[in-house]
Structures are given as structure tokens and as C-alpha cells.
Amino acid sequence: MTAAVTRRITVVTAVHAPSARFLPEAYQSLCEQRLPDGWEWQWLIQQDGHGDEVGPFVPDDTRVSFRQGRAGGPGVARTMALARAEGAYVKVLDADDQLLPGALGRDLAALEGRPDLGWATSRALDLLPDGSTTGFPGDPEEGPIERGTVLGHWSANGFRAQVHPATLFVRRDLLLALGGWMALPASEDTGLLLALDAVSRGWFSAEPGLLYRKWEGQVTGHPAHLDPAERETRMAVVAARARALAELGGRYG
Image 1: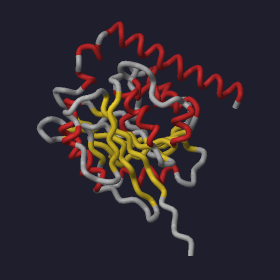
Image 2 (image 1 turned 120 degrees about the vertical axis):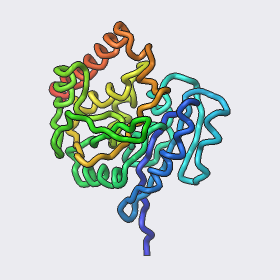
Image 3 (image 1 turned 90 degrees about the vertical axis):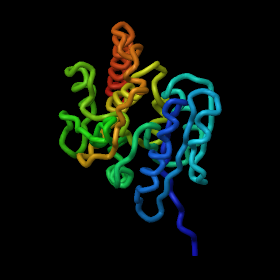
């Protein structure tokens, strides 16, 4: 009798020293996920830079792989981790965030058997310092997201997408074809989301799938992230890439 083949979901986490202390909570949330028979996850933790601060927080688990590399930001760290990816799907999990119960299973169910869908996202809840949570008011309805929908909303609403890039679940071959995350100091995940939206239909799950931690060391809260000149430049290149991909798809697709 032929043994059943185990299929994997690759969970990718970029981490730097200040966020390392949250890794055990991220790990616990991953361990609580339930997948269909024949599926398992692997967790690729990639440190953005070198040092001894992160290693002590990495779980001792054969499903977990930890590497370090030259500092270049979270997008570079995630893309470097893809060299170790074995799964047909890639799930983003930031070091300071937590998956909610059932998130991986719902993501998988959305894309399995649906070759017309390349990626999935879900509702996210902000996890505040006092332990309370709050939702995002602009969530779309559950179901497919047509190509170009995210870019249209993002452009019309102050560069804010209606789905959260930190909840992304994507086919690995599609992710690699787009080159991974954008080479930007920030907004690299939004850039990837808009690129995916330009070339493929997606899916949105209305059930919350992520606790998005708000804390004092959060990179998106740093003054450099909010610098108007840099932000304008980031948004311009993110939009230009997405529109170019959409035009190429229409021309050659």
C-alpha cells in the first residue's frame, strides 16, 4: 500500500530583536491550528540581521526552521526565507501577531480546488496593549475579490486597502513569480498584495483570522514610517508596479 503524501503550508515570519519576545505567543497560535488530514505546517523564522537576541525565543520544534541574514527589512527577510519553503502555499505571520483558531484551515479551504484564486486574506483584529481587541470598519463581504478591486479601493481611500496584507495566504508559485515582497523600507507587504490583486482573483474570509498587535516597538509606528516624502515615494512605486502588472496581464494574458 502506498503511504499518503503529506502536504505542507509554509508559514513565514520575519523577526528582529525587539519583536523576538512575542515569538512564543505566535508559536502557540500556530500549534492550535487544525488542518485537514494529510496536511501539516512548517514555520520558517528569518531574522532580519545577525545577533544573539532572537535565538532564545525560537521554539524547539522540528517543524520550525530558524535562520539569520543581512539586515534589509521584513520584506527581504521573508523573501530570503522562501529558499527553505516546501509548501504549496505560503502564510504570512508577523512575529508580534497571532493566528486565531481555524485561520489556516479556512485559508486552505478557500484556495484548494479553486485554481481561479491565487491568494486569500481574512478579517484582522487589532490587539491593543491592554489585551482588548478592536475590528476594522471597512471589511468587504466574504467571498471572491475580483482583480483590481484592492488597488481601486486603496487608491480611492488614502492608500488604505480594504483587506489586511498581514493576513495573506498565497500560492507559492505565484508568490515566487512576482519576486516575493517588494524591495521597500516599508509597505512591502501592501506592494505584494496589490501585485497579487493585479494578476489574480483573491478571497476574503469574514471570520477573524489574525490578532494584529499594537505596541510601542511596532515598526509602522516609527517616525520614519510616517515621513511624508518617503511615504509618497513608496505609494507611487507600489501603485506603478500594480498598474504595470495589470496592463501586462491584459496585453499578454
